[in-house]
Length: 81
Image (tube, rainbow, N blue to C red; front, side, top):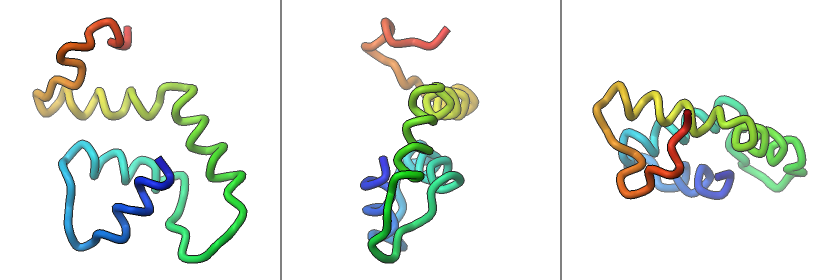
């Protein structure tokens, strides 16, 4: 996710889908753009926390629901309950 967010930054001013832009913004609320080499321990931990506590998935699921999008088409066994 860190690498994907960096890549999106380098592609500006191009934009991606609503869900990917939302995901990018959600990650950037915790981890800033890296303009230079640095130690990424805290960044990795922040993203790992978003994944392990399901907040990342839940926020995307909430957005998709409000927009009438179906994220899990064909993958119902992975639905959050």
